[in-house]
Length: 323
Figure 1 (cartoon, rainbow, N blue to C red):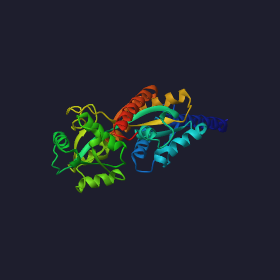
Figure 2 (cartoon, rainbow, N blue to C red):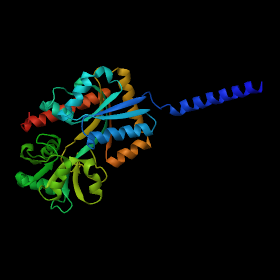
Figure 3 (cartoon, one colour):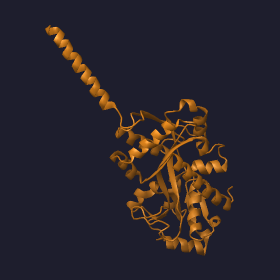
Figure 4 (cartoon, rainbow, N blue to C red):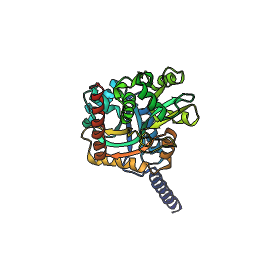
């Protein structure tokens, strides 16, 4: 009798342990796992955002399992084609992308567009900035604008990508909004943002067109000076171009796409988990560290946002002779 009672006690204890273990491992959303497909190499903007989002989701117990896969090639086209060709196997996969999916699709770098994927949500925005060296003669946007109006060719503006790419278009949009001719922007392309920044610091160029997140910490340390940002209002004391009279808004969004024909229930569950992520301290730590702004545009809102961006970029690229 004593042995039987002991066995019952052990069984009850084991059951309690299993229940407790199950409860502690349960997640606070309907998303058990996400495999992040990254269309570029390690260390880039897509890579950093995907891993930052995944890390926050995991630590906040919103997703049980996360994994990552880098797939470079074709300006992001290789990963897009892979998502489409293997769609049936990708119900737990989210591919990160950003404004270049719009630009490169317009340019014909790859035949697909955002319309060939399931739109889940935009998650963050990295606004465009114009930057000068800390000892530059250009102390303000007024100085830069005056110089451009006097002689556009004397103002060398660098970016970490080719002519007609995002860094070039952002700079052109800013000067156009200020009443200038965007085709007069003297753009100097560099092969990567780091090289463009080096060109600014060595005096090869006067201004750098880049993303806020790339230079915010250097600005705070006084290593360079941000002239303005393409947001609606100032960020961390940095004035927006809108506030300074140039109605230029540009958000290099980063967001997530599912495979084509992904179930609507699955799409909505992914979108919801990003909405919940914004409420967590884990996400706020990642966001603040990278200088990102929250930009939640789920499903149909994401589609409308992309269509509007595509229309604006297409118009500017045609005006500048890139389309």
